[in-house]
Length: 249
Length: 342
Image (tube, rainbow over all chains, first blue to last red; front, top):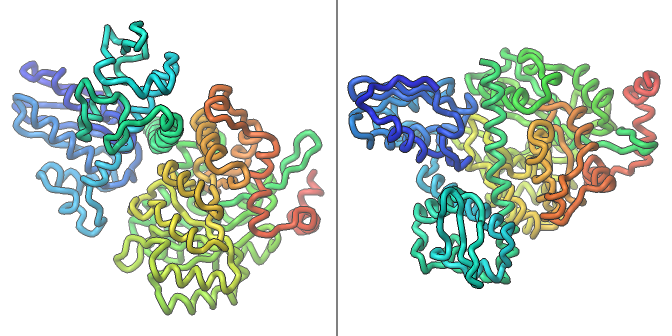
């Protein structure tokens, strides 16, 4: 990534904001995915260049990422203007012109689709919730917790120490249940889709906010596993295509 | 025919193309866009030694196809998935008329798919009947995301689609291949949603619905539907291509299909010429599921399962009698050449 920022701007804040911009299908930040090609700023105007996996990346998803990038960066203190550039994308011109003028997707592509980007983005946020929850469930299982025990857990039974996630088991013992990041991402998404995040709420709830019983957990996990594998399809596809494109360039 | 340890495996390529994407055939920028998108898939997931130059990829011709499938690619019978795309290609991308040229030359080697578009309504029904009379159509390939006069797609449960399914039943076409896969620019991804399969499969229990590309990236939605509907099958092309660069991920997909659908409902396809069958089949025959995946899903891929997936399942759907068909193939032009070369 090429960086050219004046000292007056806080780099860390910029990266923090970009962490929040997700590829909706991959459920990972564009920063982590390596989509950010360059960031330059001068007298309060930042220009960011994104390199998406394929020249033909669906315009709606490309639009979402460009729009989110601009929105997030405009909240950074010291920036009054943000220009997003899409490198090597078939609809770069249209997307850039509209996103940078603050227009919506349907204004930019009136003939392209009847889709509502908010609904689409919501669908992926919800599938992403299941995926993140599945990772946490696997960690709990791997730590030796039974379904009965998992079903009884409340959010407050979980805490972080250093970069690990710990749990107070009902026998009073403390148990390490893997990387803190897994649980953090789960809670972050849980809050984003407005599910109860209070300490007394059950740790595992479904998308409707209902508790999952011990008897239901096994099947719930089997289904969650398939959702995860499904979500990884585009990720596997896009990263392979991106790698091939980078090799060619 | 794939031979291993004295065993012969009958191979059907459930999904392949004989396309013409030469620049002369591009109607507009979408024609170029489409084939470049395919080419990205090709270069991204093929082993390096199997990557073609773009020019060859646009139009590879009959000799290349025959060689890649039957001489080098172990394929015995191939299903020609006709794709029209007249709004992107002047003469169409690979229509049943174009495909019939090789079908006519090697009738036992190819299964020819026709198609319908319910948006043609009443007039299309007559055209459909005519197509069935004029061409040796054995299956249908449906493309719900195809553009037509300003419409960006249709659904399998549209009322007019049902009239076509009724007609398909009447004229005796049983196997319906439906493209439900990754978005290909410039098609609208909504139209690849798999929910409509559920309705059509329930309402037409005598038809078989082979969901090409297993609904990727909507594998989850596909699995729920396919588990409930007896007549829904997993067309594995595109998913197959992960076997080289993402082998563990491929193993997980296979484990999911085995778990939800079982080995009798899975169908191999290369999606040639996006990828070539030779390496896909060699790697598939060598595939072993990692122990942790086997344990987690409680499934395994046996030699018998591989045999079914590579050919027997879909041969069954098309009523191919294997011993009789093997005999026929050994005597056609390709079979004779192969025997002479062996």
